[in-house]
Image (cartoon, rainbow, N blue to C red; front, top):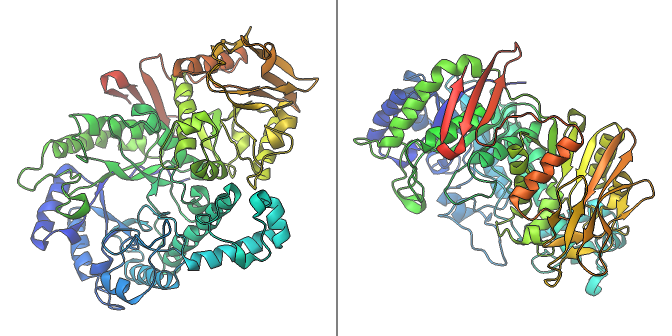
Length: 640
């Protein structure tokens, strides 16, 4: 397991600035103490100015200047912005929402299945690999930039999607039955009749399109990593994933890479993942979950003005918080200010060369503060978590298109982030009781954990159900939260009701569930052992098996009084709890979790006293470094 601490760097775009500025910018990097820069991700037009004519001379010049200052590079493949000559000659623009609206002058204006784009992007990757394989100036590689979008619905993708579905289902009859195309007489007779989901609104069709598109993305960009390896690249390869973006299965793509890397931007008032320390902790856990090993790394991390100014101390605070929570690399976006175009006046640790600004001073001081700690950070990681929150891309795909039925999802209009936002809400509550959970994907090792929590996994695959079943059977503790197991892996409602394929584990099922009518305002969930709370949006009327213990009931509404609402069931050597409604406030959710851990004699990590969080990074030899973070005061103390 590689836990090497690479420290601080920044994205640098010499291709966007006059040559005369390169040396002064690099001198400022050396003054600040940067260890590396990220480079070339949008420079295809400079690297291949004419088809087949590659020019690395200017990039070599920059790399030499950097090397003179002991600054290495994260080398990027530049597929996000094909040059104009390529756009004029070849057909690879995507068709997004029924029209061709993504083209030269933007970015990511490519269909990942376009043969010409695949051929040309793989060709420049190959040439870069040949030129820079085992180059000591290169620290790591980044594949492309923020991949996985836009979704493409072109005729080329449509034909490939039809082949994908034929391979998956074998016969049209099996596809019709598995996906429920009997609705509205939508049954098909041949695979070549299958339309794109933009033309044929059907939840299961959308689900399968997302699977198809994920495979397309992984083939397109994962192959770049294969090419680099074939050309002799031996340093680590990764990509800067957009956290929780539902354009592809991040875990499957991560199998192509050495590190789990992503982008993280903090903003005031934006709290998709909980904001402040909670958002950083969730982002770290999400990235760490891809490979269940290497520490997370950030290839983009906010280092300056975007729409709003950073307040003094904010860059230091968020950077140290990310490191405290296990990050081994902070790569700021960006070093140089964007001088023009769509991101004009965007970011820039160095605001201008004559007057770099206070973020430059803050970053410089931060690097000097961390420098003496590098030996303790190198090779260290957070202690293993005992709790994991389950995460399903299949559920995220489904919820991104169909989230109106469940109020906890419907209140988040976040571009496909409804499901991760709800998981982050559980993450925050757990942190507030002293747990720092992992994010666990289906491919992960369930046996590492004592407690696994399953929040609203509305669509559950057979593979996930089996992993859950084995976990509990072998002594694990499972908490199933509302809206879990409603759909099977094809997106059809389960015949047995929820929680579908794990009903034998929970010892419950429910067929009467849904959003509450407004007149049911006096409904509550009451329990003797657990805190009672008002039921405000969603309820599941649980039908327990004979050997299932009832821990809570619905009360306060005629006809619903004393219906089971919270249960516990022993399964094999473990136990499973099923909660039929969410506590309505963050504080009540936190209280519920605190009671759950106390009642079941599960000792939490105790990393918070309600005001300050304490995170410890530990090396294999037992030495450690502790970070004490007080969010309300934007205060971080380091105890080594």
